[in-house]
Image (cartoon, rainbow, N blue to C red; front, side, top):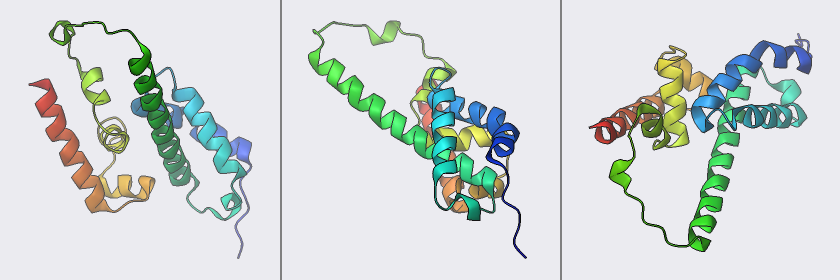
Length: 154
């Protein structure tokens, strides 16, 4: 028996808010709406979209992939800007180190796992399903993220 294909508008309405919150954890509040909408639109245009059985997980993965892409692009742009900017001395110790900055030091995958663990209160098994990775990978990324946050915040 074939299941009916959900209307993309309904799928969007059902998941948009949670996907923006997720994207915010991955790329910050300025880029989150764009990352989310780009990811969702690309998912809807994908030839395989009608066969997707777990649309929520697929969209979470699409947002994660788009966030990776945005972070890579931002890093390349930042490197170009640093190369062309005049040398300016900054005192890094004068900058305050808060939780937001510490989270920014994590990889996109680690931020995704931290967000889903602490903000969405998902278990490693649930996160593995959302991100389409193994439960062991989720546990490893969470352990690495916790260790890195400990180092940064001490």
